[in-house]
Image 1 (cartoon, rainbow, N blue to C red):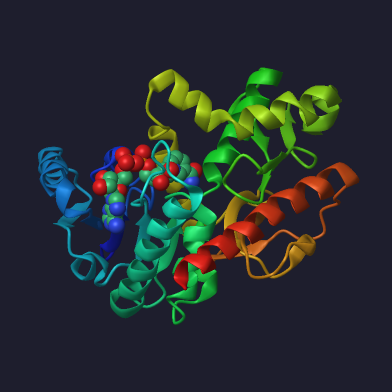
Image 2: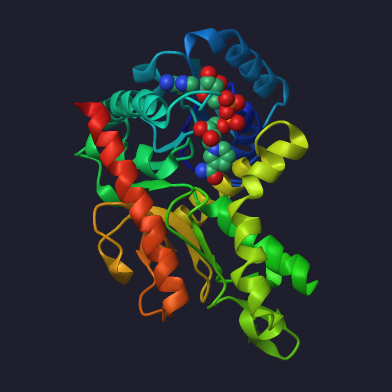
Length: 331
Ligand code: NAI
């Protein structure tokens, strides 16, 4: 039998946490033969609700769940964890300045970075979900210098999956037959959902999405804005932000990172830029990646036309600004 893997979920009493922890306990994230021990962190005002989630996990009698730590103590939460899913953060409230929200999150991610650095298992993999996800991940990286930078990522897989969903609906094909869309850049409305290299499996082989859709106006217009604005559309419809799709995509992100991407398939992950595609180094930026043996690699050599180039640069500029804002909150 495999040794249990310890998985931390911060913000575990929140909406995404509530959808995510049962998925992890059922093996959706790490596989149906991988036992897990869940570490759940939230803040004191949510302690009672967090305990309620723990009670429900016990009540669900998940065979793979070998233990639950539910705590408001960040050190206890981080101790020995192999995987950390950072969902907890300070949400933007009406009338709040961007800088004030940034400042709250910078201080949260700074202190949680230190706790992870000191107490997590060696080679712990980190996924930041909480917004501003890319910049929170960057702060976490800066304040956990002993965690390899390759181990710190942020979630853009939800945007990636949304793009797959839009293509599948438009072409009336199974979503599982669509692959290799790309989300470039920030997990924000400046992200660039790109189908230039995406394909669909058909009875006569793989076909490029741009050839199948052949409606450039839709691909360069409505498709992009629909994916960019999908989060807002969910809030409008549900009066709550996306949770089940965010949780499911977080499982996809970790599963592919740990277990590998299928041959010929890439996924989107927010990772530390090495300057690939002339994206400034030192940002956490979403790229197409393949994963093997627990490591991601940025897909190289994709052609970038003028339209795409502008979009890659625009979202990089926003991330550069966010980085500067975050740093100004440190001083
Ligand atoms: P929520 O408000 O329901 O839950 C957040 C939880 O975090 C709350 O229980 C809160 O008490 C907790 N929390 C706050 N500060 C904390 C701290 N310092 N340590 C530990 N826990 C803390 O929010 P929801 O809907 O679950 O969303 C969580 C985050 O995920 C938000 O920042 C949201 O913007 C982001 N998000 C990101 C997506 C992505 O694709 N990257 C998609 C959807 C949401």
